[in-house]
Structures are given as structure tokens and as C-alpha cells.
Image 1 (tube, rainbow, N blue to C red):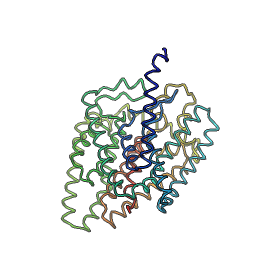
Image 2: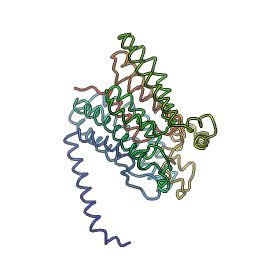
Image 3: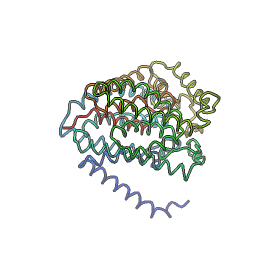
Image 4: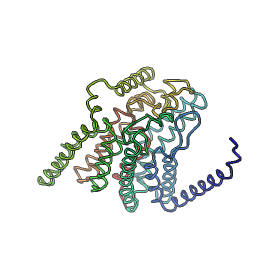
Length: 428
């Protein structure tokens, strides 16, 4: 192909995109709400905007660039007015970051240059997303920024749902995506994320948020889209999390008003039963396959067995974050290397254990457990429905992470961190 023949078209497009990106960064630094909107828009874009890296299935996503812009914007704001809460949040996440950094450095020295670049890149992505927590504490101090998060995150849920419903109607057969490393789903909502299970847990996490914010019109899109993902893991996670959270909800409501407790608990219970029945109807054979042979279940069991073999060999320090794919197969040219699910097992906890060791797993889970307990305390002390909704969303994700590597999925992690920063930040 004659590249020079297309250069007259490509070069202006690249220059225009660069100028647009530079302008976006400059305006974001001067007007932080734009950075927040850009971050959440990038979540809605999902996997559709991707700058592929040669030789492997990963790549730079629009969300990666948006996260960097948010961090830069927050850093500028922090220099203007330092905050103690920001330093505390950094202190809480720094043990995990430093521990994984040491493992990453060791992994880099034991792999080829191409593998080392991939390992380092994905570690930087993880750290960048985690740093959104202190960045949120900085940016969400202004009430206008918190309001933007409310409307933007709700709009993202509605947009992802709408695109997913349109995709399910007009493009139900996605077998052609197999050539690009994606699972060839048929008749399921995958939306812009190209994976029904990740979309399913995202929409499941958004349901408590939308109910707390009374965005019932968006639920009219979210619930059908969730059901059409046919994601058994999402339904199970929501059901189990609701069972755990129901007594907490009732105790808090009864302490305020017995009448309110009766009304709200009846409404929530009815919604749960309706979702369960609709889920069973829509899942059909997939629901029955939970108790009989199912190829997808067999594949997940095999994935867990592989992860456990890696853990037994490196139980305390792991093989290095995102080095799991190389520990399983050292063949960088293999077909499996281009599959997007290659970088971990179908269980976030086993993936963390295999890649960061038992110490890394504990350093990751302790802050999350502490955050959940603080959210529950805020509910009982302040009757903060957003705290309760976020606690339910967090618990749903933690349960879902037993079936899919969802806890380490970039877009899910961005949403979780934004939710936590929103609830914990105090406007001034």
C-alpha cells in the first residue's frame, strides 16, 4: 500500500486530533468540570475508542487519557489549596501501590522487553485509576463538580443502556468480533464495552445510585439492558448483595419511621422479585445451566484451576501485576496473547493473589472493606442514602468479582472510585 497517497488525508486528521486534545487539556486545567465530564464520557465510549498496541490484544483506551487529564487537573487544584483528606487517602492506597511497584520491577527484569512494556503499562493504568480517589477529594469539594458527577454518571448509565439496546436489536450476532480477540456473543447486550458481563455489573452497580438519586426514567433503560445482557453473574451478585443489605436498610429505616420502612422495603422487595422473575424468563436455558453441564462454566473452572497452580508456585509475592498472562504462557506470539481476557483468571481475588501475592491481596482488600464499613456507618449515623447505595454497589461488585475479573476492569474501577470519592468528599 502506498502510504504517501494517503498522507494528505491522514496528517491533517492527526494534527486536528492533536490540536483538539491539547485544547481539551488546557481548558480542563482552567475549568475542572470539563475534565470530569471527559472522564465519564470516556467510560461511555468503552472499548470503541482504542489505540491498539502491536502484537497483543491490549491498547490505550480513551479512558486512559481522560484519567491522566483528571489527575493533572486535580494536581493543579491541590497546589492552589492543599487538603489533609487528600493526603490521608493517598496514605491508605500507597501500601498496595508500593507493593505492586516492587513486584512490577521484579517482573520487568525477568521478562522480555515487549513483555516488560505491557506489564509496566497496565500497572500504570491501575495506579492512575486508584489515584482518582484523592483526585476526587480535591475536585468534588466544589458543589458544582459533585452535581456534574450526579448527572454525568447517570447519563452514562442511560447512554450505555440505550446503545446496548440498539445493538441488541440491530446487531445481535457479534461472532465477527472473534477475529479481534472478543468473545463471539449472540443475542446479548454488550454495548460499547463489548462484554455482557462487564456491562451487566456496571448497570447493576448503577441501579442503587439511580434509585437514591430518583433517576427512575433512566432505570427504564438500565433494567431492560441489564436483563438482556443475560449475565448470570450480575444477577447473582445483585441478589446476594441485596440479601446482605436488606437488614441494614430495614434497621436504618425503622429507627427513622416504621411507616417509611414498610413502604420502602415493600417497594424494594417487589422490584427484586420482579427482576428475578424477568431474569429467569429471559435467561431461559442459561438459568437452568447453573445446575447442569455448561461449557462456559467448564471454561471458568479451568481458568480457576490454572490460577491456583500459579498461586501455589508464587503464594506470597505473586508473578507481578499483569504478568499473569506470561506466567501461564511464555509464547508472546500465541493466539491467546491477543485475546482480551488473557490477563487474568475469572476471579479477581485469585488474579490478585496470583499476580501480587497474598500480601498484595490483603493490601487491596483491607481499604475496600474499610470503605464499606464507613459507608454503613454513614447510613446509620447520618441516614445518607447515597452512602447506603454506594455500599450496595460496592458489595455487588465484590461478589461479582468471584465470577469474573471485574474488580480489576478499568471502566468498572473508574466508576467505583468516582462513587467512593463522591460520597466521602466534603464540599466547602
